Length: 335
Image 1 (cartoon, rainbow, N blue to C red):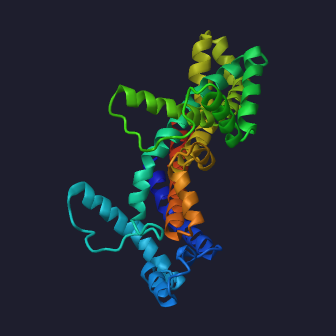
Image 2: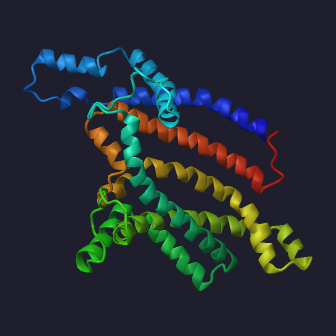
Image 3: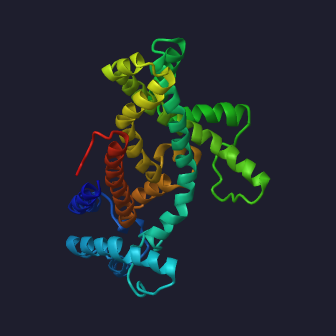
C-alpha cells in the first residue's frame, strides 16, 4: 500500500501541472480584463502603470511560471514562517488579488471558516442521514419506508438548491419568522446567546445542502446494499447461523461501502469549493461568493488559485478513496 501511495503521489505531479496549465490558460484567455475595473477618468498613462504593477501586461508564460512558483514555493514558505516564526519568505512576491491588492491566500483563509461551518456541517449531516436511510431502505426493499425514502430522495436531488432555499426563506423567515433570511458573517460566538443566533442562521442553508447531499448518497448506498444482499456469501453466512445484524452490518455493509466511499470522498472537495448558489441565496460570505465576485471583477489570480485548489483536492481525495478501498476490502491489493 505504501508503494502504491508513493507511486500515485508521484503521478499526481505531472497531472496537477497539466491541470494548472489548462486552468491558467482558460481563465487568462476568457473575456474580461482587469482594466475594466479601473475608472474611465483615470488617464491612459496611469492606467498602463496600474496594469504593469499588477503584472497583467507580462507574457503568458512569464505569468504562469511566476504563479506556479508562488503557489508551490512562496505561499508554503509564508505558511511555514507564520507557524514557526522563521523569515524564509521575507521579501518574496505573493499571489495578490487584482481587486483588493491583498494576498489571495489570506483572503481565502478569512472566508474558509464560513464555508466550512455551513457547507461542511451540511455535508457531514447529509452523510449521517443518508447512510442509515440507504441501508434500511435496501434491507426493507419496497416497504413504506423505502417508498418514502425514494420519494424524498428524488425530490431532494431533482429540485435545485436555490428553489429549496427560497421556499425555506418564504416559510420560515418571512411567514413564521423563526430564522434569519440573511447569514451574518460578522457574528462571533462568545456566549450562549451568540451561539443560539449562530445555530439559527445556519439551520436553513445547512438543511438545504444536507437534503441535496443525503438524497444523492442514500441512493448510492441503497443500490450498493441491494447488489450485495443477493450475493452467495450472504446466503452462506445466514446458513452458518450468523445473526441478521452481523450479516448486514458487518459483511454486507463493508462490501457495500466501497462504491459509496468514492461518492463521499469526491464530495469532500465541494466543501472547500463552497456552495456557490446556496451561498448567494443566503448571503453566506464564503468561498463560493468569493469566486463569483472574483469572476465578475476579472480577478484572474483569485479565480486561478481557487480553481486550482479545488483541482488539487479532487486529485488528493481520489487517492484517499483508492486507499480506503484496500482497507474496506482485504482482497484489493495494490503492491
